[in-house]
Image 1 (cartoon, helix red, strand yellow):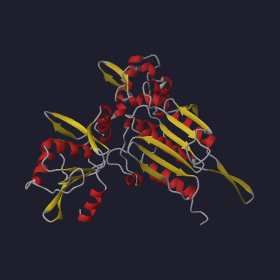
Image 2 (cartoon, one colour):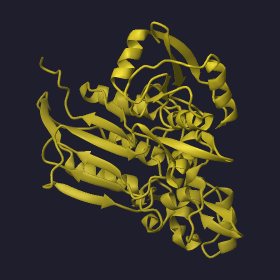
Image 3 (cartoon, one colour):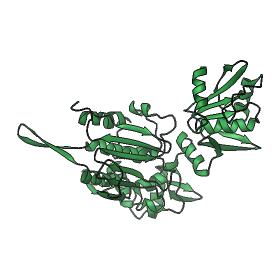
Amino acid sequence: MNRTELMEIIRNDESSGVEFKRDDVRPQSMAKEIVSLANLEGGYILLGVEKDRTVTGLTRSDIEEWVMNICSNNIQPAIIPYFEIVVWEGDKKIGVITIPKDSPDKPYKALRGSQWVTFVRMGSTSREATREQEQRLYHASGVIRYDVKPVPGSSLKDLDIGRLINYFRDIRGQTCPAEEETEQWETLLVNTEIMVESRGKAIPTVGGLLLFGKNPNRYLPQAGISAVAYPGTEKDYEAIERVITRGPIVARFTAEEDIVDTGLVERVLDFVRRNAGSSTYLVEGRRIDKPDYPEEVIRETIVNAIAHRDYTISGTDIELSIYSDRLEVISPGRLPNTVTVDRMKTGCRVTRNELIKEVLRDYHYVEATGLGVPRKIVAGMLKHNGTEPDLIEEEYSFTVRLWKENPNVGE
């Protein structure tokens, strides 16, 4: 980092990715700041800069060794940041600790007293993580698979046996127990992670209820899609249609793959069919109707949101919004650890909810290659109308935005 870059960071003040610190603080205080940045998106700690942006400079002669000892002894798992010293003016120097964005071992913990504590960055402050925030960090890093956690209070009775028979017999092509054979069903479902053993009982997992539950929202209020169609380009109280779609993710099919009972995917597709328009034009005297958005792109976008959303964020549905010029699907939660928008466009295969993804693959809702985003969503829209979808990661959500028309046509 050069002096010009450093001046710009200091001028912009502390933020969710920048912390100013003296180099005479206690090691545990320094560890707290490093951990909180590593648990978010990384960033910089500037040593020798006061809170009011005054540069007082470094005072320690062993500054690099001091920083590395803190990262080794006061942080778990140990982290190795990039450290450099930048000459400021005269004999003043600033120590720059750079914490990488894609730290793979979240959540990081800092030693506080005799305890290891998870800290997170909230604006320009570092705070102890709530239980939900810590759980989200474990989930994002893949250390804990949230979709195979048991759902307390639920039982086999909360699963739709008809859908399960359809899944094992018709989709997977294997024998399954008779409907009344409870013990055999519990054994089969535990072996396939749709249920899990907990304190001597078989209990449905989060993924099991989401996929096959009779009423998933009874236990998982985040299980659903909120769909709204607006007349203009902005959110409006006077919506054309507004529905909250509930139910199991997967449909019931016949052996000939005809739908007997729709699931969440089909119900949301029906909403889009009702509310997304089409354009009509003539080709050699024949009338051609062209939908605003290709159905295979919409389907892939919906399935991706269901498969990859962060289900640790409770009480928040996936949002699908149709505007006069675009369609947006907002999925709660950031991208899984190490995944970026650029990596998604090249077919990155990191999965947040492995059970859900694998079952959706069995139904052919998703393809085995993991190339749905580049090959279906991006390529599909480029072929349809020459527009490239916007893939937008924000602090607590991920948005796929599809454009109805190419704004450059006719220029």
